Image (tube, rainbow, N blue to C red):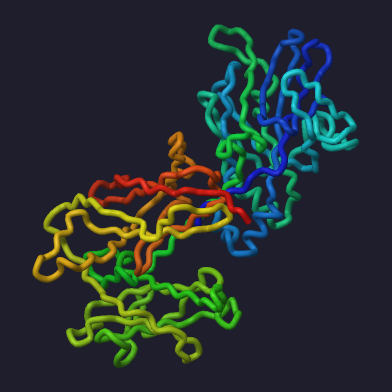
Length: 499
């Protein structure tokens, strides 16, 4: 699971715009229960130099959920995860601004959401009642500066060219400050940048105009996938080379000669550090084998720095999860002992012996392949429920597999491991992409693999219950230098958890 979404727990639009009478400003109005969030700039509506603006505030459960999930090991530590604020454009019949910027700032004092709804006449006034507005942050507590109090840094900006784009901003530095307690979490304030908010500008004809209004869906929106989210993304791929282990070769770059083996310490079904010690590190030894048990003396191999060693301390990736990366030459095995086996020890005592490894050789090819695959999900269920995280496992083989009728016609071809594979999820009722392919720096939708094949984990709480989703897969093809989407759609039905 490399994507986790957190929904807002408070939001509100605040404004100093004039009411219909163009005399009274709606500075006391509250819109905390509206299903829309709005920013705008109005110039010269009431007088030749009058200015009006709207901003909105939005808060997420950083300590209550995000920090708790980190403590529970559900999201990685600082430096290994990115957080994105995502807001979704709400179409409206009014004029959209174009070529403008929105600022995303950290609110520096507490505020109340409130119960107001009216975004047209600003009739739901709070003043000293419950809810924030342009003047007050909460009941009886004014902002230090009208329009909200904000930290100078960190600050984030997104440009909008057409005007109807969604907002997606990397706010990792601020979220980490909230988690660490360096700043109190009072949420985000979103407004037009200072040079755009409540100021005049010139259109190509030289006439002054306003920047008009930009709307986003609020947390109370009926549209599940348009509600604001704070999305955590990280690279959770684990590539265990037990099923595609290669001898080192001069044909391959040094990094490609490394193989990585993983070990998982499950105690009563839960991952635990060895002896409960987060500093404990198991040691890997490698042996030749004829196919049953390790034989002879421990082999020499090379660590990631190309040093010759006959043992290697593993690294701890997370609680109870360890890995070791190394390379081995073909001379380590013989025709009598053609296989490898890994033995993990601690202080000389054996902890675990891995399954037999069948090493392969790198080699030239006589042609430039253009691979096509047959793909299946081996553990697909007819239905799933929210409140779960599910692991989906793939079976992949070459499409043109053709067994010899005399020898292997009744056998099943080995599960092909795809080095670079990604998934995408679409709601089938309207083809809305709810989780897009993410193969960039976050690699949030990349698939892991082990000796049993490719797999990925999916947090089903990110999906709206009562719908069927289409899972698509894309494999990277070196011969084409691009990803190729596979011609299969796997259906995932999600129902509400009844408990």
